[in-house]
Length: 377
Image 1 (cartoon, rainbow, N blue to C red):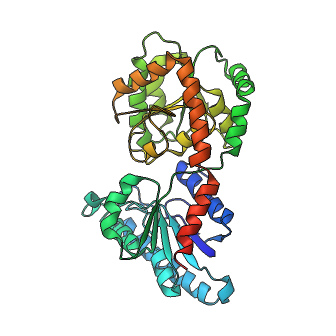
Image 2: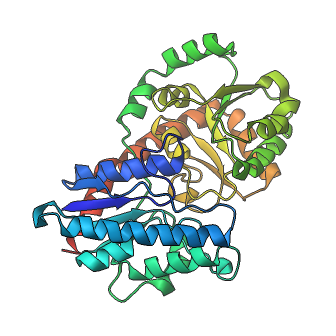
Image 3: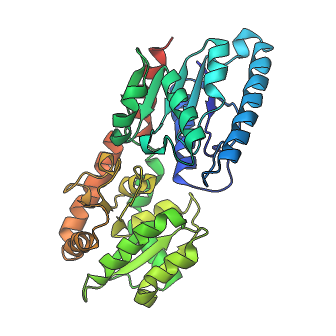
């Protein structure tokens, strides 16, 4: 099937890395693995992060014009070159889909959305325009693919009769992470020398964009680290962003026990995951956390806040530990339990790698996505 792919929040070739961009790229790869031809329909960003009604209306007008242009272009294309389905990834009130519903209706093709979310509390707020557009798009969908079971609760009332709803586990190509895990000792020795880290102490790892919406997680993490007593540990932080100064300030009391790695390329990340002893992330307002899955695929256990779809990735007591969201004391206790038990760390790390390979692999996702599309033919 020929698929027109669109991501209104951030196009998959956007220069700034993020979990959202990562999942868009993975979806395209999985669809192609399933034998489909995927074309990027548009790079139009429909995102309004400030709740500016006038901006939302301008985006709506521009989206309408772009949709009309796409419809004219596709209609002028021979039938074999036209999309047979439209696939939109990650639409919500801040980034609605102004293109897909109109183009799909005009061409008479199925409209599929993945990772859509609906927040009724936004109905009359500053994102009312985007809220209404996102709700209308979700209501027009012929199939909905979700990664976070929490989203399904609010989406249900919007879905039209016959819309197919599928819950898909977050996924990745785990081969590069498994390869890094097999070379753990070499990676650890190299990083110890590069960053002057004591290889005999447990390394905790945080991988996150340093944005304002991540600061609450850093505050919880700082509170948890303060509760670890005199246990030995080092924290490695991989990531960059506009709130870096604030994140550094939160962890400043720990001085040299925190190593800031800066922005790490996708090529270098697997080695860092594999070299660490535990991944720690409070996950405040996290949808599910692709970095958590990447860490597990590299054989790294995870301590995370139990929110959103994180439980779809971290299996509590098996591949890591989940704690109540925002509870620094509980998070500290979970980390302390793992710092005190090297055998438990190794066992959970091995289970994390095994289950990531079995339950979160791209081939499984490709098969399930293909089944969704096949049902719409």
